[in-house]
Image 1 (cartoon, rainbow, N blue to C red):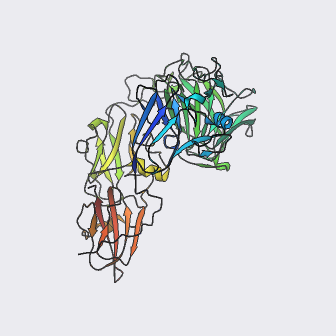
Image 2: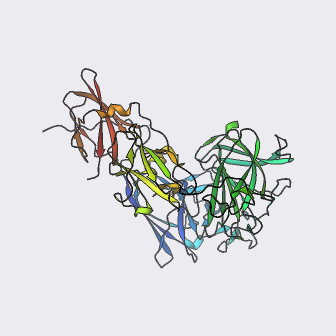
Length: 531
């Protein structure tokens, strides 16, 4: 009988080999219409995390399948985060919040392997000793009707325009960002204001930013909001997100800076958004990148105001790029059928590349097939281009990319704007955004292979292929390296025999580098499938 060896994985990032289904039962001590989870997995969004099901008796149940790592979290009831700091300080009971500094944050944590959880919203104890801390002022934007004791967090809205020349500006910075009003250090013709906001991102999370509470925004006079910004580089994404924090409605637009170390005015077009809905204005500079506190992570912004005067753009309603907010035609109108091309690099020699998504009912066989270019890339051509935004994922040799797992490791979610950071992460093409040329299978990054695609044109020397348990190698093999399709090395084995266990590897496409006793190298592709 052949001996099956268990080789040592040298991971470039930690990989959890075990997962368990998790049930969390939460008791809410008052009437509630929705109960959710929030935490780092969902960007601390009040509406991004999973929603519990009501049991009809004041308890709610979350069911989370296949959780494979420790989970930091808080509970959200009817849009309000629980604030465990005051209650824990009063009772001295911090048992349910192991992640805390006892002053500014106190978060729950589920530990892998610890089993199911029962808890009570807003307390480490029970409903009998619950005090609900929150804003008790009904005039505030964040008034909490369930709060029984005011915790000093009330936020009162301000009106646009906001020029930061006064003294009543309250910034709600989050996850590694800090904002302060300072004297304008770059007083130029583009911005001669006396005061501006200095915004520094230093550590924390890749979504670190700030928000201002505003009075309900009315778009009757203009749908375009201008912001003056100063950034250290060209191409820095500036995200402006409008939120209604109680009901969870939100709409966001991201624009890139076009100059470095200069003031410029960015115009965010919120055409079609409802008036008198949004009461929170969120700003995030350089989303997907964790700041380091240096000059390269320091930004300035000023003069948040509705656009006035003429707005340039295409004013012809029959054109492909008609801008209903434009008042002066700038000659940019385009007409006729638009062809969309999406170019995909699988980072390996493969036999087929397909798309899947809502357009095709997420059927892995119903979406279009790409055409190989001969240089390792594949093209999808849509003629004409879709007339609606297209959510999609890539399928290579029958394996659908899993960008939740990949992005969690790299902390780069830039290519998956449709995501809850937990159960799905999907790509998105938007109407009018043009061709897509930089799609790399199963990553928002790049191919990290240290070998050439041509190397993979060796005849396949591993079998069975696909396989779920093990692969057999040539008898001459003395060592091997296994790479995921995007180039990350997941194994390096010396003094191997000719059978290698692969049951623990995630489903996907791999490249295996074989080295024989004479030092000769060959590259082979294999597919790991589930049993």
